[in-house]
Image 1 (spheres, rainbow, N blue to C red):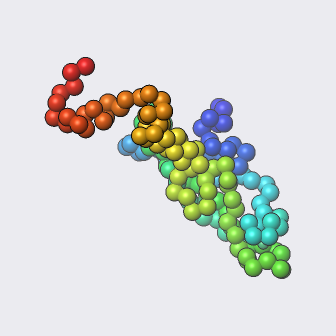
Image 2: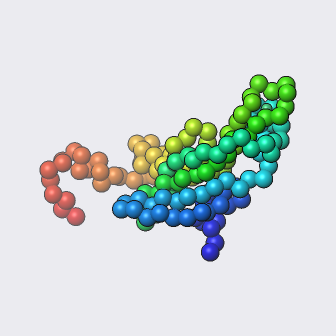
Image 3: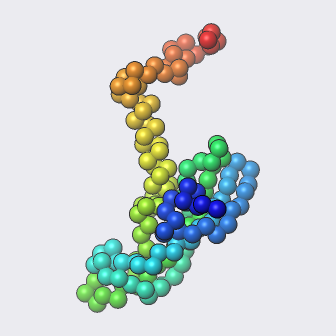
Length: 143
Ligand SMILES: [Zn+2]
């Protein structure tokens, strides 16, 4: 199975399992990065501190919401000159720090916003059916 289309960054995360619920698929993945660097001093670390699970929204699959349960790790920074003692590993191709959705979902939503926003519709010569219905909300669609 080719997971490159399923996972945001197969070099950084590995698929563990799926859990299917009504209108929701939970995809459990874990980080498999080899090299982890402190975000403050950029010192390489292999000193594992702990693990935790992040939950973020990912691109929907055929209209079904996807929740990514990402098991990620915290490491100790061994650089004595660094202020940061413990840091979370970064997965910049998957999810940004403190984000609630994956990078690719954020990109898709941003692109959709630009294309369907007022300027995007004008630029593309696109007249929205939604706008026509908003002007006459109780008129049945005659098309
Ligand atoms: Zn550090």
